[in-house]
Amino acid sequence: MGECVLAEITPALSQSNLKHFLDDWKIQFLPSTSASATMAGQMFRTYLERQPGEKRVLPDFLIGAHALHHTGRLLARDRRYFRDHFSKLTVIDPS
Image (cartoon, rainbow, N blue to C red; front, side, top):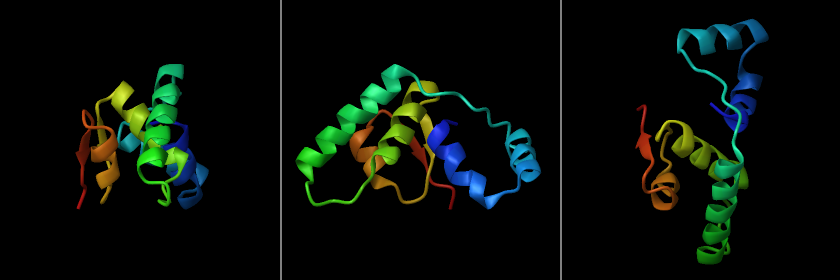
């Protein structure tokens, strides 16, 4: 899990519950690499060029690139754009 995901889940849990959740699910924090950040920027640029009026934000692309570089898979609900922009990323819907 990268910075964006950790930042997104932190407000929902107390510090001790966050640590317990991460330990229980065996989730490790892995900082982003320059390669994944660069890929996210390139994919975001492509997205903006193809769909200029859309509302996706850069952190969505940082999450996708980080997942692709570190594990090749991502747990996400209704995230069709991950499949569109990161075709080699396995997107798993938890529902």
